[in-house]
Amino acid sequence: MDQIQLLELKVKELSSLLDAFKELNTNIELNEVFNNILMQTVKVLQAEAGTLWVADYELEEITASAAIGTTKETILNIKLKINEGIVGKVISSGEPYFIENVSEDPSWAKRVDETSGFITKSMITVPLVANQKVLGALQLLNKKGDVFFTDVDVNLALALANQSALALQNSQIYNELYTMFMSVITTLAKVLDARDPYTAGHSERVARYAELTARRLGFQSKECSDLYTAALMHDIGKIGVSDDILRKPTRLTQEEYSLMKQHTVIGADILSNLEPKSTMKNAVEIARYHHERIDGSGYPDGLEGDEIPIYARIVGVVDAFDAMTTIRSYSNGKSFEEAAEELIRCKHTLFDDHVVDAFTSLLKEANYKTENLGKVR
Ligand SMILES: [Fe+2]
Image (cartoon, rainbow, N blue to C red; front, side, top):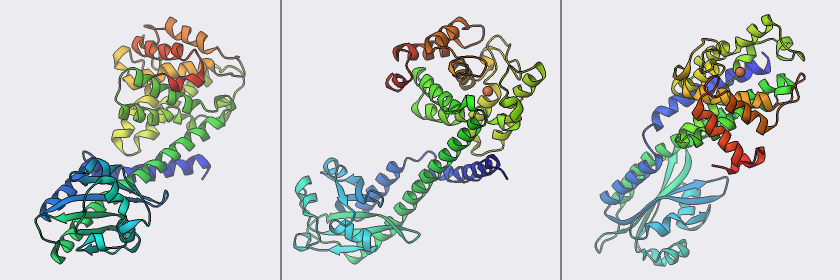
């Protein structure tokens, strides 16, 4: 198996895992889950306040991820060191901590009370454990009325903490998987680009231009980042085009050109086998249609105007721009300004008006300099 096949396999594995986890995370914002769990717990245990702490072992700190009570806003800004106070003790030991009179307990991290101005009298702190790993802690402060928490309250808090731990674990696994998925996709794009010395960095630049253009066109930020991922893979079908064609230093013959055109169909075919289907839908369309042109002169299907999906129209424009501005063995490459003029000249005929307007306005504001592009919005 060569490097590309290995990476392809890895993408496939990761993407199906991602799909499975997406089910658990769709429609539910983690913070909302935390807030709900905390709110229920505080209500059931009749606590005056509650905080849900999440441990970050890499940064060696504990962050308040949800809080309920009068000093909520202050608490949410507090970060503790990994071993600090009672929360730190509970997280490092994995054991619940229950005290009637907090003011007499040496483990209490005084600065929390000092910062928040909240007077803590009694407290339950239980660990959030999933698969024997302590992910954080749930802390309940002051039983309402002139009573203290009981053992029954501690057990109840433990049971509710388990629910939080599961939600937290799912979201952390999902994030890790997503990071891995993105790095494999990025590597795959790099490996692809490296096959042709003249296209090094092409996929990444196209993805970046596409994301910026979509943002300028008013797409939501999630849509823009999904477009980035999908656009990274727009030329993935070049896996199926032989090196002699891909690396040919002179212009392609008619026959070679028609083989090269196949990369759109091959790419769409590869990507349509991947999960999650919802993410892949755009990637498939971009791979297949990024060489379609508004007047129907493109390939592979000769689609016209709005028949070409919007994301493919965006990638079509920025891909052409990158090709024009990249030095090839047979051409020196245009300047950003010249290439922008060319895009404008081909509005209506080859390229989508709005997309060209959005992208060329970005380029103009960036003074036609690549290093300024990230700064314009
Ligand atoms: Fe292409």
